[in-house]
Each structure stands twice: as C-alpha cells, then as structure tokens.
Image (tube, rainbow, N blue to C red):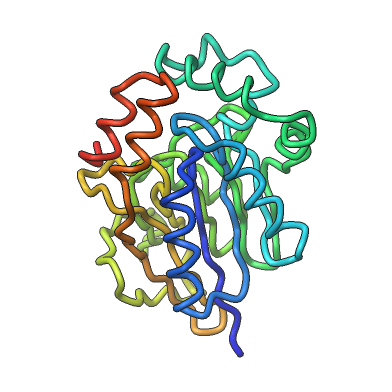
Amino acid sequence: MNERIGLFADVHSNLEALEACLERARTLQVTRMVFLGDLVGYNADPRAVVDRVAELVDAGRAIALMGNHDQAIFTDHSRMMNPVAWSAIQWTREQLSTSQVQFLQQLPMIIHEDDTCFVHASAYQPENWRYVNEDISAWQCAEHSGKTYTFVGHVHEPMLFYQTEIGKLRRFAPHPGKDVPIPRHRTWVGVVGSLGQPRDGIPEACFAVFEPHAQTISYQRVPYDFHTAAQKIRYAGLDPSLADRLITGQ
C-alpha cells in the first residue's frame, strides 16, 4: 500500500474534532499521522487530547511536533499571547499531569524527512513562531526548509503555496476533498488548517492527506459536534468567546 500521511495541526484540546478527524483518516486509509503542533490551548479537553496523541506516537503510528501553545505550558508566553489565549493556557496548565507536560516538553520543533519538512510555524526561525500566510512568508519558509514539501500549521486556515516558473511562491485555494497534484519538480508549502479551531468561516474541522508516491495532497473538512465542544468550554469557565469561535468558525 502506498503511504498516506494524515497532517493534523492546531488540535487545541478539541477532543470531538480530533476523534472525528481520526475516523475520517481511517476511512481514507491513512497509514501514518503527523501532528503539526498546538495540541493544547483554547478548548476544554487537554488531558484527553494529549493522551490520545501520545498513544498514537507510542504505537509508532504518528509523530508530533511542538507548537507555541504547547511550549507555553512550560514557558512564559504571557507577552506573546492575547489575554484570552493566555488565560486558557493557565487553565490548561492546571489540568495536565507531570507526565503529560513532559510529553509536550520533548516534542521537536521541526522534522526533516527525505524531501519533506514538518514544522508548526515557519521553517524560517521556527522558534519565533512566524506565520506562513502570504507569498513572501511562504517563500522564506521554503527557502529555509530546503525541501520539496513543507507542511505547517499555526495559521488556522487551509492554503497551499506552489512555486511558479520564475521561482516565486503563489497561493492556491484547494477545494476540500479533491486531490491536488503536487509534482516534485516544484516547491510546495502546505498550510493544513486547524483541526480544533478553524478560522476561515467554516466550523468543520480541517486536516490534509499527503501521498508522497502519488505526489498529491487533499484537504479534508470534517463535520463534528462543535456544540458539545463549545459547551465544554463554557462549563470549564473558559472565555465564552472561545466557544463562539467554534460555532462560527471565525
């Protein structure tokens, strides 16, 4: 069977969205999973999400990278985050066990494999958590990755950048569920969107499937019970705007 890699970013403690996407991944016969950072933050199920991902990693079915919200669990990011995000981090710190924090601490910031790079933010100064959301930032990311394919999260909106004939990177809006050819003679930067807190006006969870042999990527949108996820946020006493975001997808 050809390898099919599920690309999951910005789960943000959203258990309902995670389980729905894992189920879709099973139906798509995904053989391996890559979690592109930000397992925690914003939503109300950090313990269950960290345990679920750690289980997949321990079983050899997945790899996981560190995101800025993951780092914020054990590093002071109060000046880097808005008050709502930082308040959610402080709440999350109280929920996690020592072993769960240790799992987040040992996550790598960037991984290079063959002609592919995985990173939460940009491959350009990944420790500074730069956004890849337009042509210049995509070019910087690709240049410092040095790989044909670079897959990132952090932006919460799915997009794909491709190398033009003159070497510049241009943004392409992929249609959900459609295989997009990504041939190796070009350079590609795929922003896979957010599984746990989409911000493109669509509340459905988002992930992507990369097939290296076929040289294709498909972006998936997955319905899930976001009303339950939002209600958990309210019950936990987190900022109600975080619940509203799940419902509106903004």
